[in-house]
Length: 406
Image (cartoon, rainbow, N blue to C red; front, top):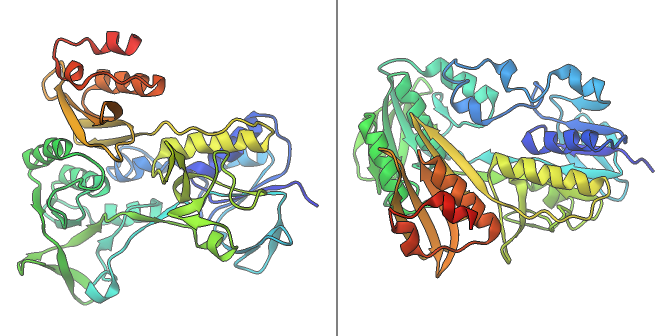
């Protein structure tokens, strides 16, 4: 029986597991199986600095390709796992070859949801943003005066709009819900970010669905909206969420909910198989959530690597996220699920503000807009279980630094 550690997925989570195992001096054989033709790399800059030409792809790599050989990590690029044979403890690749494992880690990530073909989702000029290929294709289409339709007013869609405006592209964002950021943020945060985009010339249409896209010679040229209006477009970016890549786990008979079900140690329903990152549904605050974030993929990957190496420390998520749009940095500490009221606090400098989420008298999360002090304070309070009064937070005389130190 081999003791090889096989990691399926060459993204942030998979890399984190491998790197941490080597940092912990675990000398077992490691194989990383990645679907892309390039070594593991950072994804967030793809839709920002890389797309804008401000960062070369080499700078996105976690490590040079030579690092893997130097650390005795077998990196299989452009490879796909067809299925998991749990009885034989091996993965079967698309080419029919097999790799035996002692421990298997699923770091399969998530896939952007796409528009149905029936409404023109397969036309040329319709893009999602997930990997290097997506960014390269979109960069070729960005040109001054081009007309972009962004479908979806979440963070992905708004970030795409912000980058497009830097190319002097004409941008319209449509959101089927009654406001942008409906699923992920309070109305107060949405109001702030809407104002930012409007000030940069973005057209935002809320409570507005898409009926279909129309094309000529297989390329998108027009969007028909649910209210019957039409827009002439040169390209479309779809930002309507992602779906966890959990089919491999389902086919193998592992427990799956909203992602691959794992316990506090990252183990699946098979004790020899772990899962990390965007593909997982993990325990949090008495329930289960799926966290789509780089910090979670890194932290969970590190924690799982430690468990594989012999630790018995559970992973306790401390959610945090960020979004860069124009010169606005939105930093989010905590998880706002289940909040029942918010408090808005103005920052010390112009344009800075924070939105504090509460459930009853318990602090859940904070959205900090160009307000690093509020963000740092929130992270400390959440980590310590602090629950300041909403009135204290709303009081401009409150010293956040002193509050966090209590």
